[in-house]
Length: 393
Ligand SMILES: Cc1cc2nc3c(=O)[nH]c(=O)nc-3n(C[C@H](O)[C@H](O)[C@H](O)COP(=O)(O)OP(=O)(O)OC[C@H]3O[C@@H](n4cnc5c(N)ncnc54)[C@H](O)[C@@H]3O)c2cc1C
Image (cartoon, rainbow, N blue to C red; front, top):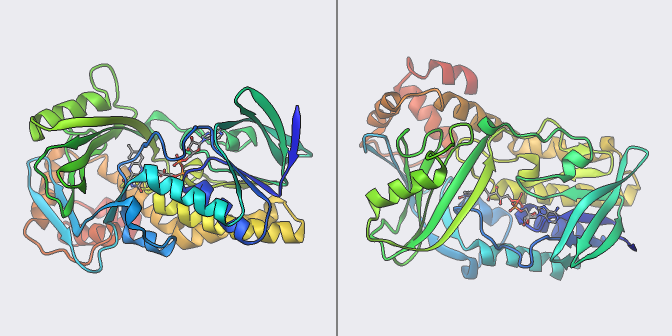
């Protein structure tokens, strides 16, 4: 078997892996970033909506932005519309073209000095004295033993790297949202707003979305709870019904299926010689299913901490814990609130959701994040949302 050595090997070239690799390479480290697919960013498994917060992690480039949205319209099960729009709203912003965006991030990593290798899949971990010491990879039939004192698992929702290192990454069906999406064209849509549709008939334990992609095109999709998915009740069945109703004459030019972890973050995201970032660490807002900007933020922190570990030649879990404390202090609270809110909203009936939508209908909500929306809802429905208030306040 071929052998190689690097300072750090990053498994998975999504946003989490590419930003980790870029940051570590900027610190002068010898970084290998591997991706199992032949093309980074393909297949797309995402609705591609991000908040303006993305600008904190990358300079905007029109090449990978399809649309800019001014706000969000949320529809209750009976069709009641709640409008969220305003200068200070940070939950919506852009709809990306991820097949270009992900490649762009990987090329930024390469420009910073990382080696990027596609069609290369990690299939096992090298361990010694309880430390992760590298990975075994297969690339077009050829196996290589890649030694590195730091292994980064950025391998997404299906992550295996953490499990190989003994971290419990198991996801119950109730903690997964299964999604289906069509890229549709030739439809009439609100080009300035992302739209969300709630209700057990539309998307049980989830929601449907219409995100503008420029012109007369949009990502039209939905996610449902993994535990309510079954024969004739799969995400695709709900999506076909949604589209029949909403865009009967629309043309579907692409389809995608994917899963989002809604478990809240792992209890442990580091081990000796190992760091997990992004979906692999379950760093997703369980209420919205959004994970791109968290993946990027975590990747930046991971790259910085790995550089220090390499400099100090200390790859212990204790040293790498700085990554865990930093991401928890920067955005852990938001993930926790999202998880609690998701758990609460899943207990609500369609009637309850209608009541909540009615309480906000016609209200000008212009300074909204998910957190602020929850506070506004609690303020207007104190009795009904007492349970939620106890959890998130
Ligand atoms: C239906 C759906 C809609 C979504 N919509 C949104 C949205 O609108 N906004 C938002 O913010 N988030 C959304 N998300 C979530 C978002 O896509 C993820 O949170 C984000 O992609 C996480 O980035 P990542 O780098 O952690 O993982 P990924 O982007 O999943 O990247 C992981 C990479 O690792 C590679 N890989 C896996 N195993 C191996 C291996 N063994 N060896 C080598 N490579 C490997 C994979 O091929 C993949 O390229 C959505 C997800 C789904 C499924």
